[in-house]
Image (cartoon, rainbow, N blue to C red; front, side, top):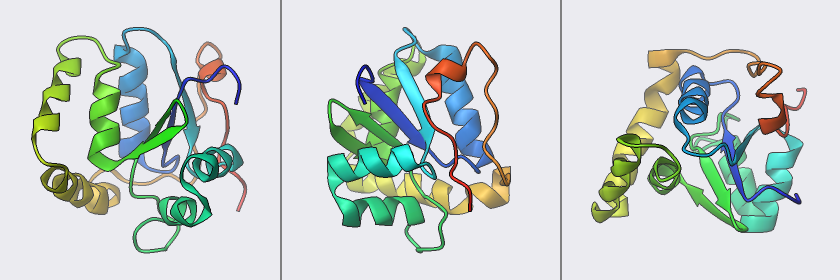
Length: 151
């Protein structure tokens, strides 16, 4: 997609994920990130270009294959980042003190991802799930480049 340097793909039906997107929007240093739900055609297209069809299917369907994505994805310059790496790279886009979370890159990815996946497995139980993606306000609409595809 021309003009999109960094695209955040999130579970559009997850309350925690929607809250994270709102947090990113509210704390971004510059409003450069664009957003789309993992359940959108755009997400499938961009992930396939960055990672291939098999990886895309696994990300969109989630680790259990039940159709619930279990990671946020950041696509920057054609490369896709997932799980804790995506979260920490997103922190670098935020203002202080949030961007300082970037220092957690010193923790080995395997350890970071264990914590990330534990939260991801429990997020619906702790924060709930909605049947539709939230509708952005008119001023934020331009930053959301896709919507959840119909079932």
